[in-house]
Amino acid sequence: MKLSVIGCGYLGAVHAASMTSLGHEVIGIDVDPLKIEALAAGRAPFFEPGLPELLTAATATGRLRFSTDPAAAAEARVHFIAVGTPQLSDAPGADLAYVNAAVDGLLPLLGPGHLVVGKSTVPVGTAEALAERIRATGAELAWNPEFLREGFAVQDTLHPDRIVYGFASELITRDAGEVSAPGREILDKIYAEAIAEGAPVVVTDFATAELVKVAANAFLATKISFINAMAEIADATGADVSDLADAIGHDNRIGRRFLNAGLGFGGGCLPKDIRAFGARAEELGLGDSLGFLREVDQINLRRREHVVDLAAELLGGDVRGRRIAVLGLSFKPQSDDVRDSPSLDVAMRLHERGANVIATDPQAIKNAQLRAPGLPCDALENAVEGAELVILGTEWTEYRELDPRALGARVATPRIIDARNVLDPAAWSGAGWEYRGMGRR
Ligand code: UDX
Image (tube, rainbow, N blue to C red; front, side):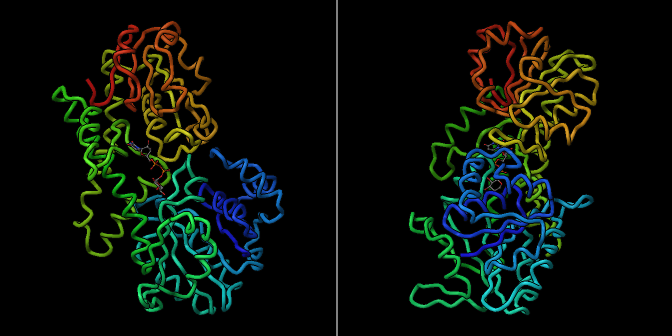
């Protein structure tokens, strides 16, 4: 099939390359000429495991092209909207400017038989409003949220654990358990491989499809903040939050995943999605229904404050002039994304308080310096040299596997905050380190 993908960021670039690998012919469109230039040359404009190989193979087929010209989508019949919906600069709601611009660019190209497929995360009600404008051209709209995790984006796109289609409710028909809607067959063909592998397909209305995405992210954020609230209690009572998570995680109804206490969640999705969801609920007059998400956000932001305070406490009350190494700048390992990164935030706060911070990261230094130009960053060995405190802020494998004895020989004082609870406290204490975890003995 001939597809266009509007927006070539973490979501769109992976989607475009993945769709090509499934045999489709794809044109990726983005307003950023540098991004398009890199992608057209088969280079990934950001760090995502598996993407460079996928892009090289996909561009070599000649079936994947990129352009900055919205009119280039004219040759496709199916158009995926994969642009960002960041938080508004002055309010908690989502900024829909890019989604609206993508639709504006598509409208003149649409006609009967065309399908627009929304993948961006949007406030509930958005698809309904867009559908009216799209249907005026004779085309149809479907909402097909993406659940990919950065670091696993290729795997999650090619082998999704579920596929959700949202259609205008008045166009959905049910016949002997078979759910049909205009556009369904096209989507089934596009995702034929994943469906054949057994990925469940949920067919529903626009509002539910939009909500599935934000509800999933709100649930995950709540799970993380729940365990971080337990970490606060554990710290005050001498309990151990890692043992607690293991124990409650054995209950299948709860599950162990997303119960890692630490520095909390960040990135381009969870923080902004819970805020946008809360803002949308307020608009609907249902602010109380999602009032708990404000708590989830507060607990999450308190983690950063806690690590900064703990750093000051361990250094005798004042961080000014003290050498601190911050390990990790991306919001999670296997990513160079520093959007709302907890670790970068902690590094910046300590730097702003006058600490002599040197931060490091295997992939994200460039992005961190764009966002925080004043923050000194260097390679791991230089960051730790002479440090009076080491903070592990992002759990990259190379930091999890650090040898406490070897590292002890490089720092000025063997003192560490394991803000992701990934190190073995006994091993580090045994090697002479003053070890502090998050809600851990
Ligand atoms: C998330 C969703 O998982 C994905 O389904 C959605 O499509 C986009 O948003 P992503 O932003 O890539 O994906 O990151 P995710 O793996 O969910 O992690 C989010 C944050 O939570 C990270 O900062 C991570 O460090 C933190 N986290 C995760 C914890 O603090 N504890 C945990 O137990 C798990």
